[in-house]
Length: 159
Image (cartoon, rainbow, N blue to C red; front, top):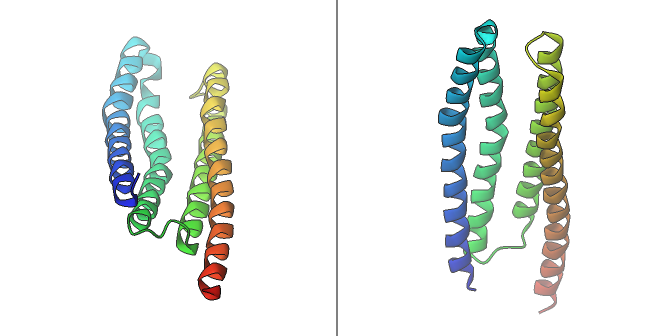
């Protein structure tokens, strides 16, 4: 597959992921929160704190999408292995780790404030694990892209 074709597909995937995320964050989560508040009115005071917390967890995700867009742009220009991509992948790894830590700490704080259930905290560990897995994968890719960029630079200097 050509670089430009691959870049177009990757951009389409990023746009799709971004739109799906917007739908989940601004349609599904508020509707789910209203449903829970209606089913258990004694917890209706938790609606806005939880919704703001969930929206806050989306910020690092969209930062990662913006960084991925920059990487895809460089891939389209046939600059897949460059130091900028390695740095952007490292930033994505940091964003994923920060988001996982934010989600974990937020769930624990809400638990101690009486606005969370231990079962929800245990279930959220899946999300934390996925965030840490994304961080590890992005860090590994950053390392590999950095090594490939070094090799490409050495090769360019030899020719």
